[in-house]
Structure formats: C-alpha cells, structure tokens
Image (cartoon, rainbow over all chains, first blue to last red; front, side, top):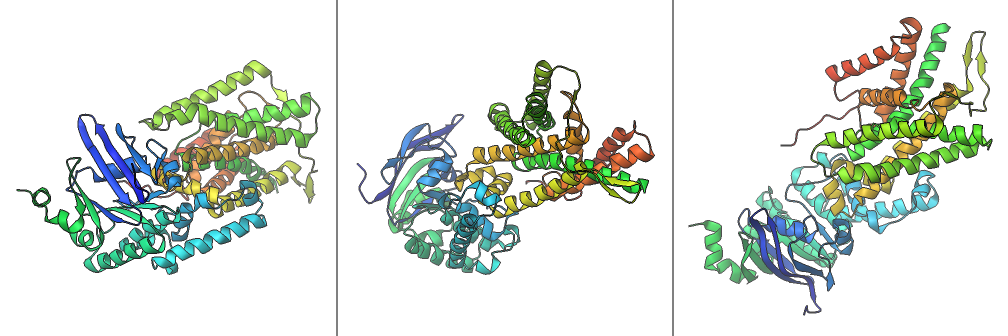
Length: 256
Length: 293
C-alpha cells in the first residue's frame, strides 16, 4: 500500500507500439517533495513514460496513482487538473502569444469569469484579469522573465524559452512537475542556474519534481533518487550516488 | 457622384462578406479546417428570421435573436456531430468533403421544408435612408451593416486577445497537444469558436437578406464562397485580414458590376482569388507558413 508521503505511485506500467514494448513494467514510487531523475540512453522510453503519466498515451497495463488517487486513463486535461504539469523536450511554447499570455494560458483553470462578462467587459472580468496578471508576473519574476513579459515567446532567447515553459507549467499549480530534458541545449553556466532554479521552485512551491535529463552533472547535482531505463525496462533504481556507480548503468550509457 | 454611390454599396456588401469571412477565418485559424457549410448556416439564419417575422408575425428583434440562437446551436451541433469525430483523421481532405456534405444537407433540408420558391424577405432595418446632396443616397441597411461589421470586428479582436477563452483559442490554434497539457479543453474551445462563427453567420444573413431581399435554399452558398475568397484575400486565420479582405472584395464586385459587366462580376471576384493564390498565397495579412522540420 502506498505510504502517506508518497506522491506518485506507478505500478507495472507498460505500453507497446506494434511489437515494440516502449515502456515495459515500469515501477516508480516518488515521495512528496522529492527531486527524482529518470535517466537512460536515447530511445529508452523516458519521454514515453512522461506521455503515459500525462495521459497523452493510455497504458496497456499498469496503474498510476497521484496522491493516492488512481489517475490511469484520465484525459490529459483532467490529469493536469489532478496536479501534473510538464515541459517538453523540444520546446512547445505558444510562440505567437506574449510571454505573459503563455503563463496566463497555464492559469486558465484557476481563475473564472463568464464569457458574457468578458464580452461586456464587466468589473468582474477586469478584476479577475488583473489577478491573473499579478499571479503571472509573480511567476515570471521567479524566472527573471518579468521584463520580457510583453515580448512574443518566440522572441526570447533559447534559455529563457526553457524557463518560460517551466513558468507556464507551474502556473497550472501542479503537485508534480515533469521536466523533459530541461537543460538540453544550455551552456554550463545556464545549466548551473537552472539547477538552482529547480531546487528553489521545488521548495517555494512545495513541488515534487520528476525530470528526464542527459546532463549527468545536473542529475548528480540535484536528483535525490534515480530510475534508469534501458530498452523500456528499469535497469536500476535508488539513491543517485549508488545508481551512478552501478556497473550495468555505466555500461548502458557508455556502451561496450 | 455615381462612383461614390457604387463605392458605398460596395463597402456595404463588403461588410457583409467581412462578417461571414470572420466566421470562416476564426474556424480555420483555430480548428484548422475550412467549414464550407458556413454559407448555409447563413441561409438557415435567414429562414429563421423569415419564419418568425413574415410567417408568424412576431417582432423583428425576436426574429433576429432566435436566428442567432438557432445558428449558434446549429454550428455547435454540426461541429460535434460531423467534424469532431474526424479531428484525428489523417487527411484534412476528409473534413473538407464532410463540410461540403453538410452544406448540401442543409440546402436540401431547406428545400424540403420551405420549397424552391423564392421568398420575399422584408428588411429588418428600421432606419430610413440618408440623402446626401441630390444624387447620393445611403440606405439604412448600409449604415447598419457597416456599423455592425466594425463593432463585431473590434469586439472580436478584444475577445480573442484579452480574455481567457480567447487565449485558449490562440493556444489551441498553435498547439492542441500542449494546450491540452496545460489544462485547456480543446473540444470546448473549438465548440466556442463554431458558436461565435455561426452567431456571426446569423447576423450576416439578416443583413444580407435585408439588403438583397430574396431568399432561396441557395441564398447562403454564393456569399459563403465569396466570403471565403475574402478570407483568403485578407490572409486566412487573421481577424483584421477578414475585415479588409471582405471590404475590398465587396468594392471590387460592385465596381465590376457598375463599370465592366454585371454578368462578369462574379468571374472577376474569383479571378481575384486565383491572382492572390498565385502572387501572395498567404493573403494580405496572412502569416508566413513555417515548414516544420
């Protein structure tokens, strides 16, 4: 039985595409507030696992529990409402929207006014929009994006686009944040800043973070525990320092 | 003076095209499909007003209101029943053919219910024509149509850019998957788009039939197609583009009728489409299409 301080509990999760078992019997147990890493060589099924967790794919077998609640097979929007938000390996911002509006899209389900009030621009509409702006600016400030709020997302430099994706995901007020290769394409300095930011937001927003990453410095630097996938299966799991010393893991990464 | 009067009539006709084109362009921009049944929704709106006002002798405002309600419900229903199941279809052609099917269905239903005879539509515009000088007359229909078009354009622009629902639309338009993962209900957003587009079709229908008061089951199809040309001309997917495209097309059509040949006017309008597609396929205000690598 899931312990009370477990946030994400994944049991025997599997999915096949044609004959390929992209994720095969994945088990995860992530504690509240934990910074957990999911690593593995390319094609190991990491992003597929994220797609299963967010409901983009429906698993063939297995159960996903978030905070004790079975969320297996729910629609993506309901999973988001249940408390999982994510970023993408290849950035998927709304490029033609402003930085501010990208975050406000994330706030969509947390603020309410009627469409009629919006058309007539009633005070209720103005008030709620102002609250949304305030909240969005708060989030942008955390990521140093406040000054860029009115730029189009596509005008941001690459590193800031990655940060904006995290800000947008945080706007949905998740319990669990999934980061898909947050450091991809960043230089060492940016990666270092990112590590600090991830730890900072984990504490500030009381988050649990599950991240996919290839940058071993980042993984070793901030992840408390790891699961290593290889060919869709769990190769190793446990505290980061132990897993990274595991000869099988080293072999899978470096090849023979 | 004659030129000015043709020009004004052109703007008036263009304003109707613009309102219809706004519906086309919103649906295309957000759901990424061409709803060729859009013109026939206009026709349904006209028959609704006709039934309520001319047959049941109820007040005009009630007719307009009911027409908007009927068209909105119809638009949302068409989307839910005919287009939504095809959202994952591999080819966009599937949805396009379905839309043409829906268009014929609506036309033939109207034929079945109201017959093929042309119905005389009474103008619902209570404003009298304004005379400027001796020769120039601006009809009440023209004034109302142009005003309605401008108001709709402004409200729509504000709605799309400044509200939650509007932002959801823009998000869905760019990336359905990412929008969904941020908690946006894609189906509901697309429904709302169809609702708005169809409500606009009702307004356009009432204005169109007030200016050109004859109603048949095919009334909507030609203005629908011309509004599509207007939307492409202005840059499909763009709200100001639909407005500009509609007005320019209306002017071209009316001036062609006046100075070239009234029989050739339609041909000239469609020639505009061909030229636009050859010279600037994205239209006046259209976005550049980026190839995904």
